[in-house]
Length: 187
Image (cartoon, rainbow, N blue to C red; front, top):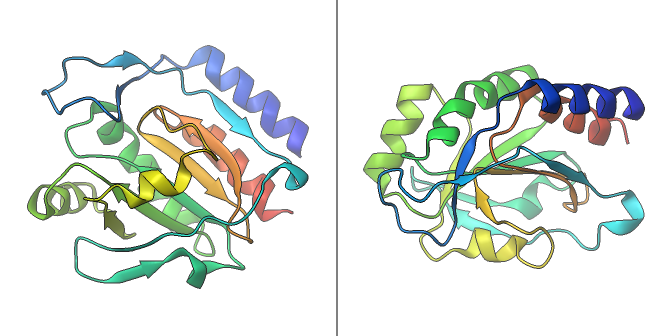
């Protein structure tokens, strides 16, 4: 199954146009300054994963989310912001994944937008999962040193112990993301 997922991912990368993504540290300048994103993905074997990610935060709806509460389940964390074109392009795919994988938790992390902007994005795309309002960049910091978060969007798959199992840099190809999730779910 893992070999099939990797082959499908390689094929999808070869056939899929590359999406742009903005550097996390770049100012929100309405689209200027985008760097070429390559949609590349990295996986880590169970013995290479280190410890679980510790992250607690408040959603745009005012609820508290603690990744520790989801230990025992696979989690997909997506870093995004509303005016990011590849974030907007991948939103329908993430919504479909959330619907197709009811036993996998999805969590957005947004370090840029105010509540009104983020909630408008969530309504527009029908996002069924929560997003942390990451004003103080705790979500970004939780991944630093473990996963090189160089661009948005970035999508991270956590195993049942909360450890980083995979990462997609740039717009997530849904076939690749589904393959990565399936691999971690099968562990």
